[in-house]
Length: 396
Image 1 (tube, rainbow, N blue to C red):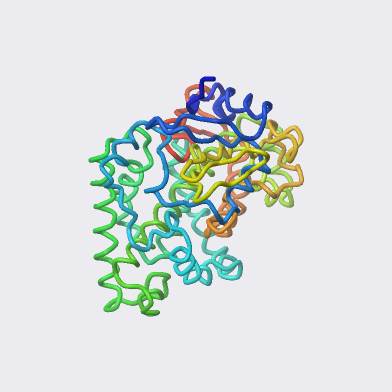
Image 2 (cartoon, rainbow, N blue to C red):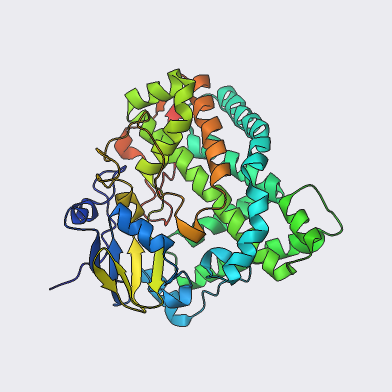
């Protein structure tokens, strides 16, 4: 029997590829050929996805994983995509446990609650500028990107005025077509910038996360650079794309937009539903079996790589009836957009706070908000590992 390779092309901008959604109806686990020829697995069912992500016998280390897309094959072959020390997302316990523990205290629900007035201030300032400029304008540039970027910069203690370079380099790293040399160069630039910033922190301490970690003295400058790299890139790319793509989804589903705008009590639930329905993790996550593991009656052999297809798992009708429909009043929660298990997103409370504040503020302040182009003309991020819109031309 022939084995599939991962379909990436979406027939409709807000839905996962039809071929992958179709596979889910045939079962939760499928044999799949990775970009380098490795025969592994694709997971499309919700329960199986949770089981893989929570299982202690799966590794997240890049040297054990096989790439999903051709351009990553060259990087893997050259063995040059090193995991920076401190970049704990790509580590297994006990290394992962140590870093994660140090940072959990920084991202408590209480601390995120304390940030809410500042997030609201930033959102209002963006909206003031938008109103003053008048439409049409690009919502990504004017609203979706500045809010999480400014918040993560302030939280970490990274000067916001330096954002142009690291935002450009993040784009290079997340682009699925970037060549190996360019990806490594972008990584090098972000790391060098953060390393210098961290080295200056003892002389210029402030009330920010990096200063706190420097003062704590448990991590050296190189480890701190890896931690900062992960938090900086993940902290602005993910929420920025949720705000951009979420607005596009609401503008193309006017009844859902009205529900979010007219009833403030819907916002929190609506954010969870947008997270589930849109699932911006375009590819992966990946795991490699450390020993033979049985999931839903299939044996994943030691050394085999598993790709979890979160956008399709998050629409599994067994867990989310009528999951292909956006319904901001659906009892939300339980989705896998922030992952599951030990690698569940550390910044998820921050992301939720940003969206809970930003979406209602946008819809209230600009009740006439609409697309300035036809929905088909909006450029989608099909070429990026985090899905979304490249630009969102709007007017009101």
